[in-house]
Image 1: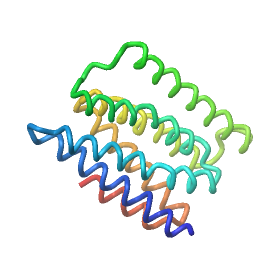
Image 2: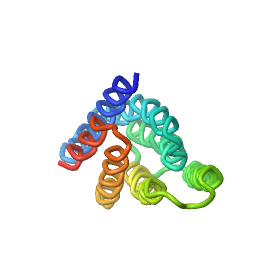
Image 3: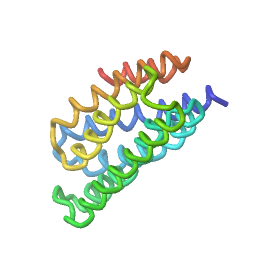
Length: 175
């Protein structure tokens, strides 16, 4: 089952990244962005299951917190609008902060503090993943630098937790 989840999550995220990057370089990008965001959303459950199964509570919370930003990306691509409603924008920020707080708190509770290397990687992933999703939805090019930080950290985490398919997928995503 774990191998299936690695292929599902890895394929979904890789395809989403390819589509979203490609959308940056075409004039009529609406369809690429829509499909990219939908594929991203479809790959998400596999990641959450895999991360939670290894008690990576921070990373699992991060993935879950990304859902509103992904939905924002879908809505903004559908409407072809780069400026989200301020209330929705703030709602996503608050939800994201609450999920980070929940993930970090539960991880600290589970491990009696920040005591493991995977926890440190997960904290680095927080900044890379959430900032990149939010900035990407708003078409800010800085999003890709944040994605790189998250990809490298997630690749290391997957490698040390014996998930080679996802580790390699994360590194290939850098290209």
